[in-house]
Length: 515
Image (cartoon, rainbow, N blue to C red; front, top):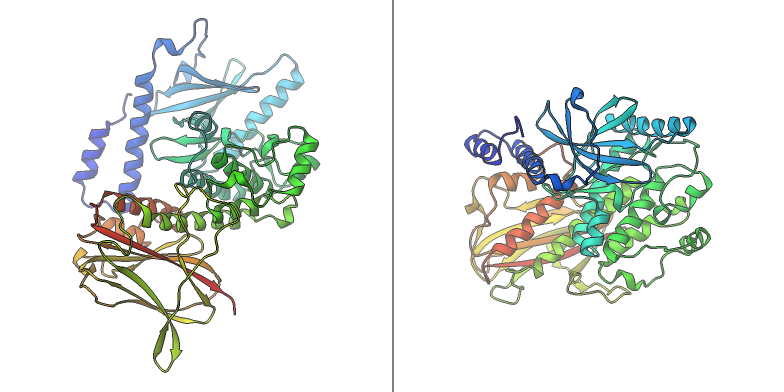
């Protein structure tokens, strides 16, 4: 690709420049993968990709070279092209405009609306629009090209996704929708086929705003039946429509089934009014907290449905806490009773300077038998109340290195220990040394959070930049819960890479209730 630096050239630059901060490194790494994906896609294109008799659009005067047809739907076509003026591959979207003049005007207006809606939105999980061009009475929307296909394609090829990927993708799209809704726009057609997979970043991106509408737009019913909120059939348009569609999409991705299958419109509305059965055997691959988030997004009455911000926060918070739960069963992590005994201790202030240990209890099992190969067991739980002053300590029966974190109700990840990020040596602890981590008063809002400690025989293979990022000191452009998901995946990878017996993890749930 003309003008696009190679992966090796960009990586050499990143390695050579020591002045780059963690956010700049992350941006450059993303650009490396984007350029590489563009070049790889062009390298894969051959004459066989274009069926005999296919006429490629000629957009040469506008600076685009069209290579192949990516897809055809009931209302349009999408072509793969190269932007000759900039080092990037793009997707050109057009409409099949019929002979009827009125229908042509309606189709053209839909495409123009998509351009208007997307132009003002810049978010890593929303497909960008670059330009609108017209060639011989044919109109094209120039879009960011996303190479991985749709989540619907992924579902067809791989079957149901594991809950970690599905929840992460839907949470990413939910954060993109927050930016969309901030502009007064309702997507109205969120579904797996309108969510694209960015292969390089392993993230999801929302696309196809062709039927998007401004809040309060009283136009005709639009959307895709299995993912449409019941009020959409009455012409109601609100941000709650997209919450329902997100919940239905997540259910479909993890179960392989539609929450309310219909097949007729009357059947669909009756099923949606009844809600999901409880228990629902289709949720056996899904941890109970994520099932509860889905249920909170699917009430037939929009007044009983979570708002988008609350839905995304609940989904992200549950996901990040569940990722912490998986650490105790990751390859390479030993249990607290194996080669090293690691213990998190929470004590409540009893007055006069005395702290009494709070007994841990096991949480109640969910109503559905879960697939324990895919769903992590619930950790021990400590019940606390607003106003309690508590102390957190950690002790291990072997000398080693220690890191302690917590994940709050909204999914924010905080590094509690070590406080000194300048050296890994700061996390060195001796055997049987009771290490004081923090004293804190339980204040609103109430909710659940995870405390987890990671003991390792050798220093954790995390750089100072990575620890700073976990501490909330890097990448200000991304929300902290968003970054926390990435950092929890990094913690999973770190645990998995440690030698057998070289690491131990313990997780404790704090349930903070109102007095």
